[in-house]
Length: 209
Length: 209
DNA sequence: TGGATTTGTGACAGTCACTGTCTTGAGCAA
DNA sequence: TTGCTCAAGACAGTGACTGTCACAAATCCA
Image 1 (tube, rainbow over the protein chains, first blue to last red):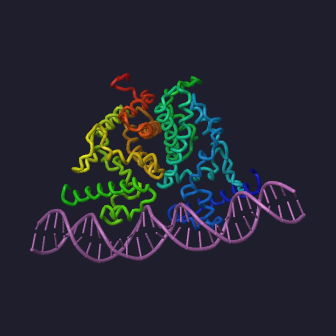
Image 2: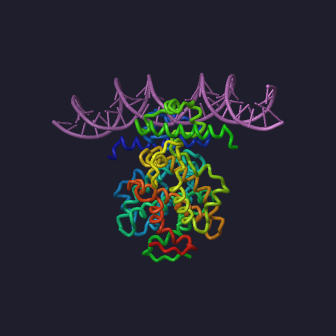
Image 3: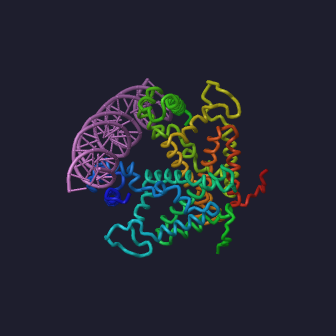
């Protein structure tokens, strides 16, 4: 499972994604074809589709979809989903994740632009935005059953509140982007989600400032 | 503005939509081409695109997008958005809206299948579902400023709660669909949104049954 | 180490959604 | 009726995406 094949695969995916973003930055998302991306990454167009499925998928690269049901169950506390989300965001923010080899771009808090460069397209390119919404919707459908399992809410309420949570996060992320990405995302999530706190009687009794 | 042109236009749109749904029901969404739909509706493919933009658009036909800013402001009480949503749903449910001429299908509560036939594809055809999400996202971006204008919430919170509202509605609609569409949609919205009531200190003090 | 097997890769052809542009004809106002 | 406007249709082109197939490289096993 961690053989040469897997390493090649990951390397190729990273290469495709970065070359693609380079081209998008240069000439705009729509003006770049899959063939050009494939050529720039020195793979075949078939491979691009195999890896990412769609052109938007190159940018979105749904981390949620990959996550196994167990891993999801692990990070999500159904009794305090907002807290879990905050935890996940905090963890994600401090993790480079892109870690593009030894290119060694800035090391500041989130000065490294490479992991966040993609986010720009979430909000500037309509088709990418749509793809993000679809990904969030898929994530929500995976999370809702876990929320419903507590029995504190009806199934309908579990679905509604899960969508509130997931797409609320999206809204917070957009605000973060629109503000220029200075303050940490977690701050936006915390602030934005505050009105939703009442849904889950927080066990941590953290009454916000 | 209410001339022959406009009437023709509306008639053509209805024709396209209905013939398309007929074909989709027969052979499945993916298996039907725009050309076939155009032929069945006796218009040119160009017109299908002119009217609906995309294949999914034929099914979604975003009522929200058309609504003028004034009309939106009119139906939405920024102090009680959940109540406004419920009102809108109730109004929409009792209005035939499709009213497909004199075909005179059943007249029951929501026995007329034609206005609701589309909804099925919202949840069975992935690409249509994605298009619905995009439409809801667009609606949210139009509503959020109105919510923010009250000043009761920060801009971030306005965005987050608006997304919660809009996509919460989507979740309620899905539950309604999954249950077979017997009970009215408004009941699902009312039930599903109950945990969100606390966000807006309801002026109507309506404590639900 | 060497052969059999699995699995990812590239090449290719095809489909179809969608985008422009241009011409023509039908509504509409004077 | 006579121009004016605007939408419908025809047409050609682009590129995203799909399915298939042969081949080669990685993995497995003896």
